[in-house]
Amino acid sequence: MKSRDYDKLISSLKEFSPDSRDREINISRIMEKTATGSENSEKAYNFLFWWLDITWIRRSVIFASILIIAFFALQQFTIISRIGNLENRMIGISTENILESRKESVKINATILKASEEINLSDSIKVAREDLNSLVRSYKDLQKRYNELQEEIRNNKSIVPINPGLNNKINL
Image (cartoon, rainbow, N blue to C red; front, side):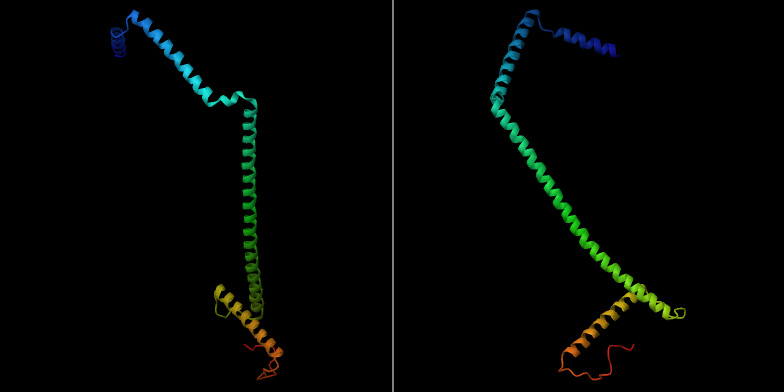
């Protein structure tokens, strides 16, 4: 089947083949067009890149391109270092917050352990950890406010305490 298609193609090409006298004319026309085409491309090349023949212009352009590349490299280095500084600041702030919350959690746990040693918890009601932490924080806040109020009473002579025997202790 393939040989038949091939034979048909060859026979149709032979039917439309140019005459030998046309062949010489075609060759000369093709040669003329390629010669003028190369002249046109050479003209375009010379028009666009005339400055490459002048050495000082070529070197100046090379030097300018090196300066531009160095500028972009410096700019990228500056941006990267600033991003690094911002990341360090964010990490520092986050670390301080985390450490402060951990410190508070350790204090609360120590208070809970101290209280559990003093009280027998076997028959007591179980309380959620967050509720207990909230209770301890509220107690510390209340103690702090009470101490501030006592300090204000001591410093301000116009305020007379109702019960002068009550020093600094809250009986719960």
